[in-house]
Length: 343
Image 1: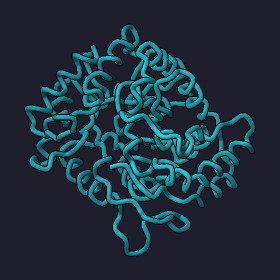
Image 2: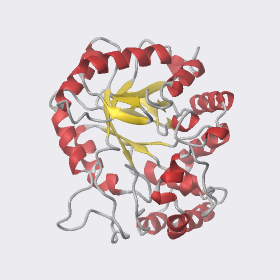
Image 3: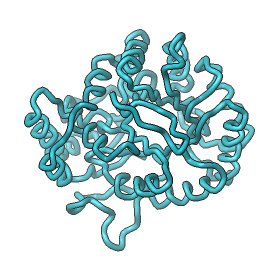
């Protein structure tokens, strides 16, 4: 796999990363297998997918503990990205951006991950009761202390409402309309004045492309990496989910309007287009086409497909070898945008 870099600090990573959340949280618990998840992490490292993305809230805490076990003897091969700034409270995640809490959370993550440093420490959610400059300043102190190498911001909770109908050709925000990332851009401008932003994490995929037109230009102008979360549409863009099949009650998709039977059926043209493009390349899957589209946006973008199984890690990493043609890109550019967003 080719390499790229994170942020202006030019920290080297693989062009595709690994989202570790499904191993411990949010998706069907009956399919979790610690040993299989460890094999998935090891396969990712062997294939060059060195950026491993987690958070202290995943579990909570259990995902970091799992990665700490998986990386014994392999820490120097991994680029560890984790998040802090939220607390788990009665089944909900509550932002806590107080500097003292940020410092404690980082130290706790270091212990769980069994490491002396975190490569990318991300503010999971700005605290509305704490100026974001104070939270970011505490994170900057962690860099100066040698506990953290670079800083990032998760923009997943800073996104405006999704469109209620397919966007027009080009899928930009539309003349006179408010950018869905207006709030995220305002926060980024504020924290950038305190300490350089190394990476921004946002949902981005062929059916959720707004970050490519509204957030990526800001990142490119400042040497900031855009981490594409949910690049496979939480599994939908793989073409392996069946409308009406349903999800187990503990799976977050069971409660999300994007994954009702009606909405999944509504978005079938997106999966059909990915399959058509895949068929033209022979032996390529819909998921690999979706990842290749993101890789085609340039080295500034690193997809973070989440999985807990080794076979999907291998399939995802193979997407690095898929090069889409101009006609492929024209077809994918014309796809309707997903009608409901996470957040």
